[in-house]
Image 1 (cartoon, rainbow, N blue to C red):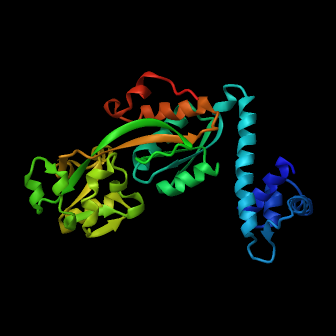
Image 2 (cartoon, one colour):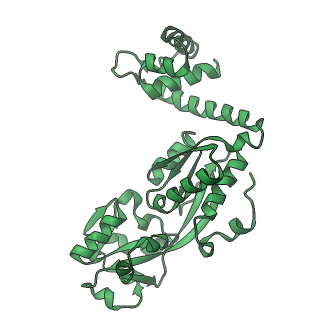
Image 3 (cartoon, one colour):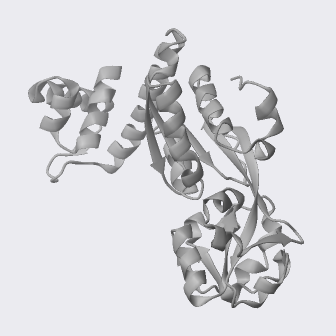
Length: 310
């Protein structure tokens, strides 16, 4: 078994076509097929169902591919350890970001990289928390930025910032007359919310604060904060917004923002990598870009004072 053979099966899994995979690997289709057959013989396992169109992995093949992804990832990590400082902050960077965080990070991340590190090719991926964790553990992405109140000890967490939640209220709603709104008594039947897999309720630092709120049905779930604001504008009620969204609102919409109290819900946003991640310089490049994008008063104190060490 060789790393090259593992790269070949990963290519076939990516393209689901032997000829396209061979072209991507720079070899002939016959050589690719032969090398994969040898690997299957060595493992005594059929990795791909060649009768399917497009080609798909067998059940046993899926597990082989998952392990191959990790092995190839670790091999690349070993190679990175021998490169110079310049080389370690160049090349492709696959970074996953939660959809409720991406609007405030991705544009500025691109701008920072293009201005200060054009040698880095940024590949952001928006996905819910469950998907990001899975891809991170399978070494399909290099790092992930998300809010995860329930900690995962298998990942290394670098706290980035903490922000409060506010509500955006229609002038027709009784809550509009209040200068601040009690979070514990929010009437969820008038709420417009993000869909379940990215809902802010699942990101609050203290889940006990929202236990009562989850028991009441809400009006409608959307995947877009802009859509929720429009629903409030047109149909009344209210929706929750993170602190970093407020600067993006027009002046008339900012007048509809009310702070939440008793308690004040907030979320902590962190950068996550695998515990075997070694590219410290690249990690700090990303951290520096985020520090330049987030108001200083929201940043984690340690992030402001210290460089990230692996």
